[in-house]
Length: 498
Image (cartoon, rainbow, N blue to C red; front, top):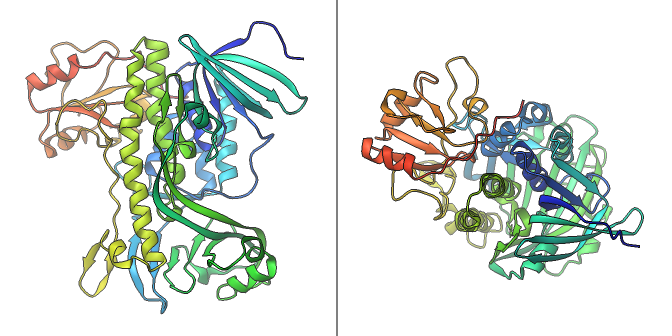
């Protein structure tokens, strides 16, 4: 029997506790937002899925106070090389091993269950965040006051409901929340079957190398990825006439792997055929229902940006939700979520498709054109992160929509740890401000000696940075600085995680 008592109330219900849902919940916990996470499964999925995240993601994990707990579970990636059938390098996508302006390394390899365990364990720090596993959401009914969320407790068959101000679907490619929003999908045209093989090495195979390798073989394109510890992955194209079930059988898998390893080298952990898609939801929000992560977009894996895109969604959405729920901002603020994130993720997906053309050699010249040609050397690829789409950026000002750097403070600590998850104004000297706006953090050259040179390098006197570390606007003179400060209603400052 369904409990007829008054439903519990939450500010936000998150459907799905994968990396995106758990990151969003940690951010909302940091903001003091009453949050319920409902997850269908009993525990973290034990097999590898995503294997890469970047410096922007690690900076966000720093924001929620979990970077130090994640670091022991990651290795640095030297990058990716694209090789032709003779082993000659076509495209060099090496990654620097030095820290980027984000304050972290550009590329990390990880085992998704390890990351999820850290993110989920981190939820226990927040008294306003509740996690319920084995809860299958089946109905969402919204009105002008909120959303009625109905779900089944799969452990006992009990039906329950809660009320929420907003519901965020972090529930994957077959998202229930997306169906309730009623969104169609824009198809960017990439749909290919690939056999994903994860192995655990039984003996050292240093010759396999640390670089990810894209074998651009027209007969059978393949990808090799070095994982953490003894984990190694191959992704191999499934040919049109092959049966997905047959190709995943151990004998066939070892036949396909035979050019690299044998059963004496490794144990099979998983072999499964996946269809890589390139789609974007047309509508990320309907009233109080919103999407994030794979429920909003799916990309071929060749850039390693699938999970990263979802983590960026969480960063963009969390502070806006907190501003509406906690600080009284107009709900229209949420309209900027899709307008900013959708063009950003589309640009990454389109580049991944072009790189897929290199790997399967169907559009190799188009793919190579994404990099920089060098005389007597392979094409060099450097991926520049896209700008945010139109949203909150203040006019056509320098750097608006770019990521802001994380400055090292003069005491040796990281700037974000002092700023917390709030707005900050970079200015060379506080003396330039006639009146320090209440609630707005200020970072000056007295705090971090890199602030002044960075401002001068870009010909600006100040930069206003949002909680998700994107630049909302800049000023080149005192008049523009006044407009910059006047343009923002500063949310209550949220301290960084301890």
